[in-house]
Length: 603
Image (cartoon, rainbow, N blue to C red):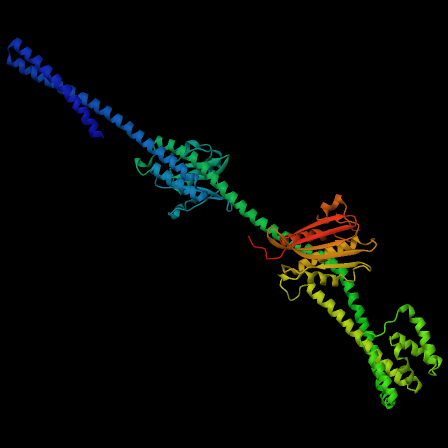
């Protein structure tokens, strides 16, 4: 470009000089023609050419200076345009970066490129250690250093956001020896020529350190300082945004961790509340269960004592039995009586209202068989109590033939059979209670699994049997539905709480009744099990029906309820991805529990 510009300039200058030369030579020629003297001609030629040469030299120098000035302006303009273009690209690149370390690396790389610096680092603030560390990490070991926030020069930089040059330190910090000393030490340790504090809203984000320029004796011209100021202005904002973003991410992660921790605590608290409520109801149930088990246990104990006496009496009178049974008539009557007495159900049903009258009639009839008052009275009682009035003649035979011992053996045998039946029935009751307890506490079962809701409710009713007030009618309406995927233990708690609430509502009700129904429905194309627990109690007032789910809200008398039952019930149902609704009016309260039959899909 220089050679073309200069060639163009020289071409115009030569044309101008040629014209002057021709004009000067014409003047010399005219002078020669006037004076007709050769010396004058030569002298004129020499003078004219000398003057033209000098003029040409002077003019060329001026033109070259002008050309150089134009070229320098063009270079500066081209360089400025290139810088502005790169600055726009730099700004765009910073926008896409979120990490302070990445932003610092980009800033350092750009400044190093624009200013032609030996090295550029940003000492970023590290919250955990309370110091400023270089980013990116220097390759030079001597530059891998840090500065504490309480360093005097660092404190001075945070209060004076300006470009600090090494040779200006003495004039800037002449009134503070300690800060000046630390400042010189800072420049020396970082091997810097320029230090710029990156401050935003009086907060020191980092410290920019710039080494020597790679040429011009290591010094920076005024243009570089202007560009540096522009770059720093952009960099501070980007670095602040990146720092804020990092803090926000850290806070978000911390918040997520806290949310998880709080969620875990809430789940633990809910589990504790469920356990607390279960233990509270368990305390009431234990007394009832103890009574339920104690009653058949007492029957077994008494029956075993009686059975022992029956067997002992029979063994002691085996000889009498053998001797009496030698008589054919006695043997026949004894067999008939024994068969009838050991049957499961009596063949003759006697109306309790007619028992006394029937006893008198049989007593009078027995006297015809020559039985005294005592024997006839005892025999009539035995016949009516065992519902065998039709065997009166057979029993009379035992008394007529002095086979009273045989009668006593028969009576003990019947008593032994009855005691055995009582023991069997009592054991069945105990087994039923233990089986219900085992199911209720879901022993030998996993927490979640496919469960028959009918079994769960029935076993809950067995556990609550002693608490169900005398006279409360339990009506069941169970439909065949598939097994439901659920937590057995938690649903048992749901049924316990709802049935307990129904029993509480029936305290002062005539003809109390609880209706439990189970059926399946389709909701939005998904199969659901619906359990309804309904009572004809006093109902829930409309003004508090929305509050019954609130923790610690209760309508029971002090000491009777904790107010956690229905809140826990709702939490358990929602945990199973189900819903619970209540419909209440005086004389009719119904709780509807909707549970998905299939295992809910995890998100």
